[in-house]
Image (cartoon, rainbow, N blue to C red; front, side, top):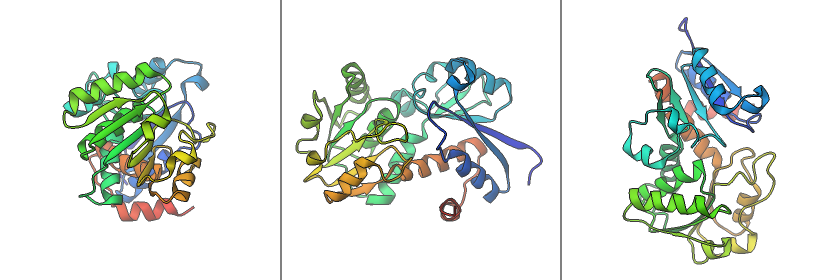
Length: 279
């Protein structure tokens, strides 16, 4: 074990069930590193996000993961060296080595990796209906473009948010057609894939973003939520016969990518999966 603890953390509002501390601490152990990982919740601290972020920096954290609802809010505090991630406009991984700190988006890289590992590197997403255009929706939208999605239909109850994401995707992903749908029914009609990038289904946010009748006839589904792994949305999609990509796969791949950014180390993914599956 190295004598220096690599201090990491997660800033978010609803993270009591997050498995990120366990993933990073186990990955550290597998790589012979002393890693600590803390949950940091601004409302519990009676602070706004920016104050909490600065506290982590002042306390000597090596880096942070950022989750709902702060992935877009953190961007003005960062430098974002990668042009593709700058286009996404949301960051979930921050390293404090530089001033300003450096931002990355392992939801973007993790989604691409998870999709290819689960469905095969030659599989194209086809026509995709995505509900939710927030921070993770941005990352997944750009990931779908990279994977060769032909047509993305966005639905968000906040139409301005969906329109903003459509504009960013059209500017950064020229080969993918992007439309904003006015209803979930419109978005899902004739789609091959269904994607949930809302918090619905998360612990504390019960429900499904897509009604079960609209799942019929589709080919595959992805849910960004991973606590619980088997959400109401994925249960319905399984019942309708769709191939499933769970939020756990995104969690795992984004975590491995973030760990590499934080530490410079590649963890053995097979061993990490085995360790995480042990209670």
